[in-house]
Structure formats: C-alpha cells, structure tokens
Image 1 (tube, rainbow, N blue to C red):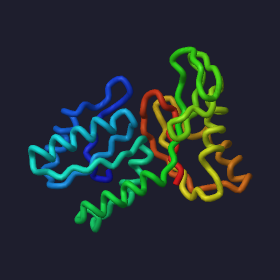
Image 2 (cartoon, rainbow, N blue to C red; image 1 turned 90 degrees about the vertical axis):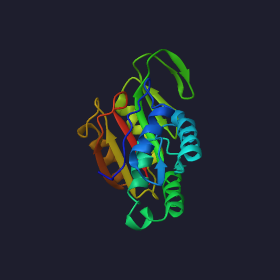
Image 3 (cartoon, rainbow, N blue to C red; image 1 turned 60 degrees about the horizontal axis):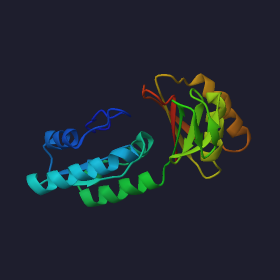
Length: 204
C-alpha cells in the first residue's frame, strides 16, 4: 500500500542476493532503497546494492531495518517530496529505523539456555531489540514483559503486527495495564499473518 516492492523473506527461506537484484531491476528506477527487515538479511541487501550499482548505473541504498516494524515506521515518512530527493530520503528513513525499538514474541524450537534463563522447546520467547528478555511457558506473560520493556513515558506510538498464530483481543488487557500505569501510547494494528511470530512490536 505504501508503494514498496515486496520480496518474500522468512526464517529458513530468506531472500537471496539474486532475488533482491531482480526486484531492484524490476522497479525500473534510477534510485532504489532496500529495507531488509531482518538482521541476517542486511549483508545480503548490501551485496545486492553493490552489485546492481556497479553494473546497472542504478543508485541503491540500504536502510538497515532489522524488523518489519522498523520498515513500517520508515515508509510512513516517505512522501512525494522525499521521493524526489534520494539522499534526504535515505537520511530520514535511517533515522526512523534508529528511533524505532523492536520487540517480538516467538516460540523456542528446542531446549536451550537464553540470556533470560533456560527454556524448553515450546516455551514463549520475548525479544527486545534482538535480545531474549523473557522465556516463559505462557506467551501472554512473555508479551507482557516485552511491552513493559518497550513502552515508557516517551513512547508515543506502538505498532503491533499480528501474526498467523496471534490475535488482538488477548493483548488488549496488557495494553490497558500499561495505560493504568501512565504508559498509554497510540496503538496501530497491522494484520501481518507472519509465521512463527504471533506479535511483532514497534515502539516510536
């Protein structure tokens, strides 16, 4: 809806350099911004940017988003004026990515030790800025701790991307708890349908 070209990339089937190159070329534009939306895809995006810039005369910039919520924050700022000034667009979008903290809830696939303590396969894992902050059998408790870590008095907007295994209703009591403590940001819901992550959170 924001005008981006989407390249499917999920854990276990992440986008390749070739797929990103094909997407860049398919735009037919002289300037292209790449938002990888995943830490493991940033280097792939940089390789694609270097390759296409060298051989096709296209300027490609990587905006190093590490989560879809950071890309959503960045794309929300990309207006017609910025679309005419690639250098300014890169600066504005990179700042939006830096200013957006990211969180998520997923499920452990095996028994392991985490920075938040040991977990068993099937436990919920809560991550903030890429680090495990909670491992708990109850995914709502994991979501509660992620939200408590992400949302403070200076957070104005909370974006929640609901995955295939998530829902909105079970989070509403947790959001009410935050509001009761004086941390009640505007909430923007997105139905993402992503596998493996019931909820992705972006705090701006």
